[in-house]
Length: 490
Image (cartoon, rainbow, N blue to C red; front, side, top):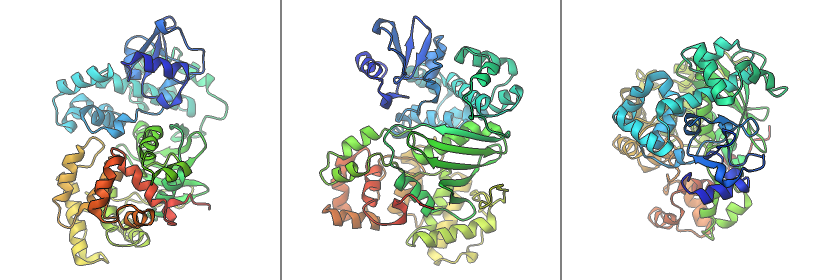
């Protein structure tokens, strides 16, 4: 979008928050870059330059605006919608892969050469993977500076910087303030009391309907791993350097995020997982605009606009849970998952109580005795086959995975049918066009609304909803009075 000067100019002049994260406005006279919705008086058009990423603006010598804080804007919805190399790379960079494994590690995960990855990112985003990771480190550093009382040396290494000098230089360059000045300017009440415990605000594009989003997560919560308590969805997180516990609460203009980590180097990755799980980078205007063109869906969209797709914090975990949920009720699926957690999950301490385990990894379940599972023999075989495929890499469901290849890998497993494949594509791979025409709830909603009820006919009708069929599923599911569609009240 940044190449369309007139469209970007209109967005800036109208202070349209829908475009925050789509592009960044750099002002040549002040050497500052902003988000489109910056509240200051817009500069003259001849003084504006538009960049596709904060990293590109930083590389061009611009610093972040202190009023609109462009580094804290929602991410571009393109990285969730698209499935090409650049989108996959951006999802992996957000997950911290460059900081942990370097650019060669990023390229290896993507299956391309380092040179090819750098060339494509530079061509589209104006910055290579190192610059994009550096911009993310700066954002992580600002969060730690402003929301903790950690010593600056600890902040530097937790944010991923190799030295304190690099940390200081980067913060001054990006924010035009020394780290100590950033901390002094932090808003009252924003600081967390203890190292490792953070209070954050996760932004999103309006509107957002929290009902099905939090209702689904709460209704399917696995005991010991997830819970709904005091107006918040809480869960444990298995992270590269340790583990964490997050509490997420919907607010009118943000998601309140309370995050406790055993290792603060996991901060950026934990935030990225929470954002993916709640689908916070979606563009509801684009989604609802297209779905509302169908006269059948239009009243549903008007009634509760901004529905998101409830996703997952861990793709492999969801794949296991999807098999456990085959042909059983929500309650039965929770029971089966809870037994796996109790028997094989790593125990953790939760000061608030309620959460007791991490969901077991595929490797941790590799020695599972199928005879201990209280389910039909064929589903036991399907479950152990899924676990083995995840553990040995025959099925790859990470944030940078190729969606088409992952679908083919899943479909090749015995007992994994189209419903399971599409559920995993929707919630684990984050495919916005995933569609489950054989789902009983979806077919019941379709029949009630006068849509074609047979899977083949429903697939043909759904072509008009592309590329947002996963969101259409949420609107159709919401016609049923199931707990997944209601925000918990207790």
